[in-house]
Amino acid sequence: MRTLTADLLVLGAGVAGVYGALAAEARGARVLLLSKDPLPSGSTPWAQGGVAFPLDEADLEAHLQDTLRAGRGLVEEGVARSILEEAPRHLERLLAWGLPFHPEPTREGGHSRPRVRHLGGDRSGLLLLQGLLARLRGPVLEGHLAASLLVAGGRVAGAYVLSPEGPLWVRSGAVLLATGGLGRLFPVTTNPPGATGDGMVLAWRAGATLRDLEFVQFHPTALPDGSLVSEACRGEGAVLRNARGERFMPRYDPQGELAPRDVVARAVFAEGQATGGVYLDLRPIPRLEERFPSVVAQARALGLDPLREPLPVAPAAHYAMGGVRTDPRGFTGLPGLFAAGEVASSGLHGANRLASNSLLEGLVLGERAALAALEDLAFPLGAEPLPAPLLDPGLLPALRARMGEAAGVVRRGEGLREALAWVQGLPLEEGLPGALEARPRLEAGHLALLARLLLEMALLREESRGAHFRQDFPQPGPEAYHLEAQGTSLRKVPVGV
Ligand SMILES: Cc1cc2nc3c(=O)[nH]c(=O)nc-3n(C[C@H](O)[C@H](O)[C@H](O)COP(=O)(O)OP(=O)(O)OC[C@H]3O[C@@H](n4cnc5c(N)ncnc54)[C@H](O)[C@@H]3O)c2cc1C
Figure 1 (spheres, helix red, strand yellow):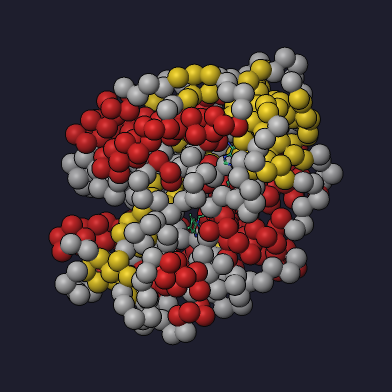
Figure 2 (spheres, rainbow, N blue to C red):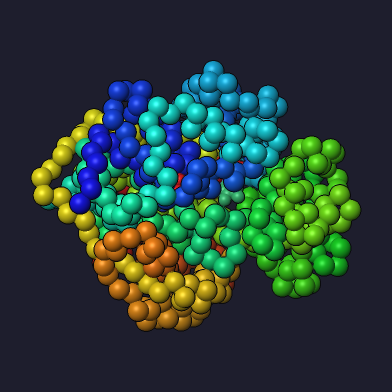
């Protein structure tokens, strides 16, 4: 068996993985960075809006309050405060590295002030990631898929990897999971094809805790193919109308088009059901083509012209607030395993992510997790890969349709129960494939497992909070709690514990 060794193995080359790898390299560590897709990969290069940074000392408190408000009682306040306090240091560094942040911040939904810094119009994520990748010293192994973690005596010691040249064992002193989200669990999503929640399943099977998977943010304004019309468009004056041509958002929230995402997504869903469609009118935005080139290009690719007509939009699965539970340093609680970025649940987002807080989290936690990992490197003997879940990928369209119906913007106990029974009946197998051709079976296996866990959590959470809306329990419950799955146990855990 081919074997490589590294101090730190970083799985994933989005913002969290690359920024973490840079921090570890700066400390002189031997870092190995893997991406299952060719670069630039993941959701990061698709991000349009930008990165939310507090404007100054005085704005820090306001940014925190906006984050807490969006998170509906489930934000870990200490974690959020510490991330926002650290944010200016990272912005300064990125500016010193020459990243072309626009000097004027924009305002996005849920933010009380304009504080989102964008790059290159709406190419924020791409330019950010390219700027980071350019500074890496070590190579990124592209087309390398981590199929399982190597584990010895309760410690994570590397990964079993499928590469174009066959299977590979990477032995490492620690592993940083930065594999991104799970949007591909849903039929309409803004996420790239690789967003199949791999890291969450790898971590859970190794014994780490998954938290709050039921909180999936639905972006309110996706085009019919799932491509996104950035929230920044609404910040700059775009208006939502129903099929009767009526502007409806002010009826749902005093902040109108700039209400938090969950509110806008439910309003778009309800108006779509009631009137037969919802449209986003971008024509009020001055210099539209210059300001939002990607949005205009995406619409045109679908035969739509945003300069002349409002665009048909609908909610699409966009961001996983839940994930691998970590402490404020990105430690999962499982020796040798750290997580950062969308794969993780650090406590910043609670029940609903505030727009553009996620790239910021990727930066801050990516660095913290990498540095924490370097403090505890160990190379145990006898590490072995765990078996991976496998499913016939031909079942994925049906799985996604079930998830869209039962666990979309609006949920009901009955629908969730039916979907869960169906998912439990899927012919999930276990194994350790030896070739990259098994990728679709592995990803389908990951999605089926995550579907089960997400549905279990959505059923147990008999309340509506943030992105989780239950028609049969439309109000938030009296106590805010997290849901945590470890092995076969699913527990309610009070916030702040
Ligand atoms: C369309 C869109 C627009 C967005 N806009 C914004 C925005 O404006 N501001 C903001 O803050 N957030 C935005 N977000 C969210 C944000 O982009 C993501 O949350 C963030 O980029 C996630 O970064 P990450 O490093 O955690 O993972 P990703 O960037 O998703 O990277 C995941 C990496 O893991 C790799 N990987 C996955 N599985 C494996 C495996 N098994 N083995 C090896 N490698 C693997 C992938 O190849 C990839 O390199 C947006 C998201 C989308 C989809």
